[in-house]
Amino acid sequence: MNSLWIDSIENKNKFKKLEKDISTDVCIIGAGVFGLTCGYYLVKQGYNVTILEKEHEIASKTTGHTTAKITSQHNLIYKYLIDSLGKVQAKKYLYANQEAIENIAKIVKDEKIDCDFERTDSYVYTRDKDELEKIRLERKAVNSLEFTSEFVTETPLPFEVLGAIKFSNQAQFNPLKYAYGLADKITKGSGEIYTDTLVQNIEKEGDYFITYTENNKVKSKYVILASHYPFIDRLGYYFLKMYQSTSYVIAVDTHGKTFDGIYINSEIPTFSYRFANYKDKKLLLVGGSDHKTGSKIDLSNAYKILEDEVRKYFPDCTVLYKWNTEDCISLDKIPYIGEFSNLMPNMYIGTGFNKWGMTSSNVAANIIVDKILGKENEYEDVFKNCYISIFPTSTISFKIKKILYLHFL
Image 1 (cartoon, rainbow, N blue to C red):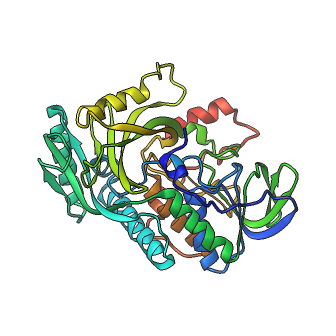
Image 2: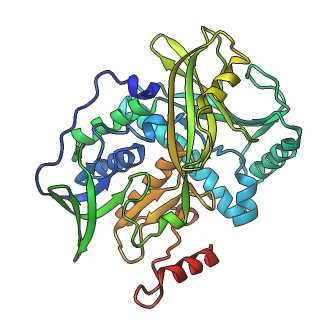
Image 3: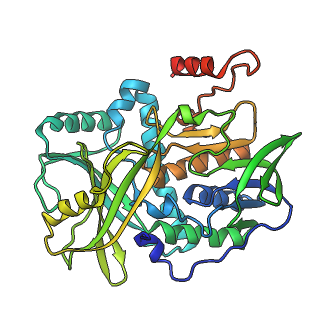
């Protein structure tokens, strides 16, 4: 079943398949929100941009199957970041994502993109007394980073919580309407988008890259891998650095009963809530049932778990949509953003967004565009990729490389 977002686009921009060899300044592989955001910023800077998408439509995979929360509140992450990286880096992570919220708001306003963007409060809550101290410690950690959060015991949710940490002035939107808005600005500028175009390989030839599709090739000075999971992995070894997680969403009509805010609980099983516009009404999106992709578990009840949960509070609700998505989860909870490999300068990547891709994709786009422009980005070092490709390929076996990599994690 399609997601609510995909069905909300009635008049989709139609893009053609690449059917000739071309040259461009920047070749972007993947037309999800990350690739489109990179393309948007680069076109604004006067670069010729070519975006290649293997699917028939843009933004139809992870972007089109997200819950589309725009927030710096990535569950309970800030105490972890302070403990593992220190306050300076944790603060950079927080403010990089806060800045991303404002960046998205500015794009929506400047370009007049009708994408149901709205400000709202974000909450991580618990109904488990064993989790309550974690919520309190997270608030203390966040506030130590010169950011104001609140500990609350009451929320607009239709059930009681023991406690929650609240971030004010976060946001939500329709990601497909936003993506098509970006695509429109790209193609009206110095950018081109090709769909049904599968990239098979990338090779370095002198100062340029040659990106090979099924029948054609694209020559460019820069390449950005925005393809969700890196399909070119002979130098980055990203399969050692992250795994994929599958989660599920249902969209239900509560028949007029609504509440404000975006929510996720801190305990397991995970439940996520937000309302979204749908024609002349609002639908409640309930997400969760997360598991590591490929796990040998019974998936037959994944949607039923969500439905049973929401019917506790809205017994007469009607389920209108069901969908699932896969997200890349980094081992250290921080996205990998920057150069793809130290052996391939001018090739960039953003991946491992850990289910928070709406904000993280904007963070990544700004870091990579600044790299291409030769500008310093104050947040780059938090997300900088850890290279494994420094090990000599001729003298060290893959098995030893893996051991060395795990040792240096």
